[in-house]
Each structure stands twice: as structure tokens, then as C-alpha cells.
Amino acid sequence: MRNQQGFTLLELLVAVVIVGILMSIALPSYTAYRSSSIRADECIKPLMQVSFEAEKYKGLEGAYPTSMTDMNLSSTSLEGNYTFNIGAGSTGDIKTSYKASCQPTSTDVDPVCGTLTIDNFGARSATGGADCWR
Image 1 (cartoon, rainbow, N blue to C red):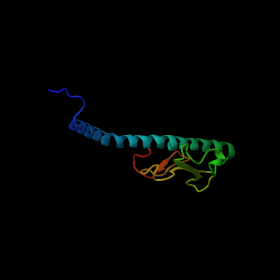
Image 2: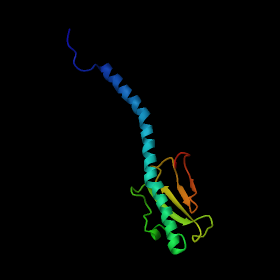
Image 3: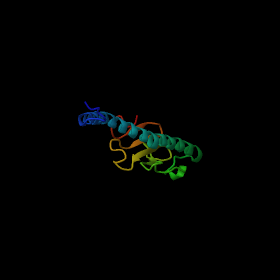
Image 4: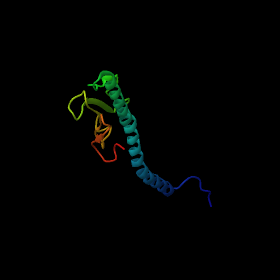
């Protein structure tokens, strides 16, 4: 009787199938978590900063800002995955209301979620999936 060294082809195939099954379960969860993390870091947090800066600007100037440059803020996120805009809100007058938005630069960046907006009352509205902006 010979001493066996190594693995048989059948053992290797079983191991590859098991790894494949585990990857098919884990990969969607990982990508969803990663997208959610990017969304929070590049859209939600900066949009809250835009809201804060807009209120600060109104306190100093008497009206809300008409552009991101008025507040010395960039109109794109750090990684360039989202763009930010600010304009007149529900009253249609920039002196009394604003609406700031965060929009993905392409569907490749965020294929499920659309635009997140916040107004001068702190009310959020969003397009896309229901769980996108939590």
C-alpha cells in the first residue's frame, strides 16, 4: 500500500464547490454594505454639511446661498461619485427657502439609489429604493 500525498481530484472539486457556494452568499451582502458605506460617506454626511453651511450663510448674509461656491464647498464628493446642488426651495425664493441635493454621477456609481434632497426644514426626500438613504 502506498502513502497518499496531496488531494484527489474529487476532494479538490468538492472544496471548489463549497467555496463557490459561500461566495455566492457572501458577495451580494458585501457589495450592498460597501454601497451603503460609500453613500453615507460621500453623500449623506456631506449633504448634512451643506445644510449646516447654508443655515450659517443665511445667518450672515440674510438669504440662503445660490450655489455651492457661495459657501466655499465643492460641488462634487471626495471620490467624485456624487454631485451637490443647492437652489430655491418650496417658496421659490432663495431668501426664504432652499433645497440641497446629492445625485450620483452615473448609474455605475449607485445603480439602485437616485437623488437625495434636504430642505431648509430638514425634511428629506429621495428617489430610488426604499432602503437607500437610511
